[in-house]
Amino acid sequence: MKPVTAEIITIGDEILYGQIVDTNSAWMGTELTKAGIKVHQITSISDNPEHIVSALDDALTRADVILMTGGLGPTKDDLTKDVLTSYFHTELVLHEPSLADITAIFARRGMEVTQLNLEQAMLPAACTPIRNVLGTAPGMWFEQEGKVVVSMPGVPFEMKRMMSDIILPQLKAYFSTPEILHKVIQTTGIPESILAAKIENWEDSLPHHIKLAYLPHLGGVRLRLTGHGNNATTLEQEMQQQVDKLSKIIPNYIFSYGELTLEEAVGQLLKERGLTIATAESCTGGFLAHKITSISGSSAYYQGSVIAYHNEVKIRELNVKPETLKQHGAVSEATVREMAENIRLKFGTSIGVATSGIAGPDGGTPDKPVGTIWIAYADKDKTRTKLLNFNKNRLLNIEYAALAVLNLIRQSLVATVEE
Image (tube, rainbow, N blue to C red):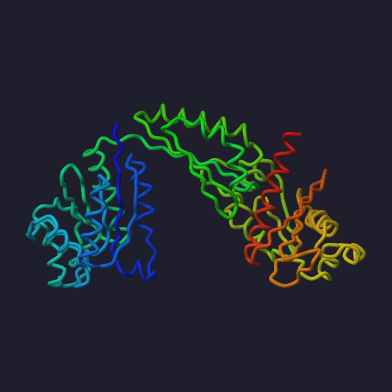
């Protein structure tokens, strides 16, 4: 089955100026994929007739479906409808159902219909009008040599309603679309290049209709498998087989399947095992607590925190020995070990974790440069520590350290089960 491809064209100077963020394209990409239509390109252009024509010309050479948003309002800078009327060599005619919708909207608002809004009911004769039940700008569906061009308002809730109710069903009826499925494997604690080397043989053996994408982010690397096929059940089974193979190759680095975050995955582990946790933070200044408590329901396992930024607080609130600080310093394995063990005792939790380091940009020394961070995990049976060397800017050092602690919790809990 021939793949059906799409291109999205967003029209509006406000997008190019950065005054608004184009969330429409991301939503459309997701929904088109579900419909078996693959987006090949997203283009943002200004409210300029030449730009619109040029973008449309280019898109029609490489895509089966062109979805355009923006430029359908009632004001003079909204040019899309007039440009499309000229492009498809047609003329504007009154569309009575659209006029009735516009009139009804203004009636509900207790307002008189303006002439500019009445003119929105004038649509190209060559198009199939698309009803807009939430606004005054109808959409337009054009067909040319087996390809489809659709123009919609840029207002997100209006566009989404049109896409869901009318456009996506019509596209599936117009084209014979294959199935497109995604599977996401979330990894952490391993750089992208090393991960790629570990799974190279598996990746090379993937069937031609299943592709792998590496999507690195702050907390790790998302691996996304995308499969194309004619039968959804068969494709699902094939892709799951590949995920199962991968799980045996890098079991220690996978923390979830799907879009679960690391803090969500850790929270699930704690909740499933009936464990509680407390945090002792120095260099991360409460960011670790923020990550943990950003998850709904975290009160089931998270007890609280001590932000022991100053050494006196480490001594007074966490019972870190003065001699430990004097002999080893605040940024040391010995200090962070005592912080983790003592926060657990102080709060009576199953687990205690701690951070102490030099976030920067100042405070580094030849022995302990900026980005030197110690983290620790402690439970009733063991204490695990780890030295981090990030050498990033201050905020990144803090974020990386918090994520590293979350991964240390995950690894410690998984290791407990395996042991």
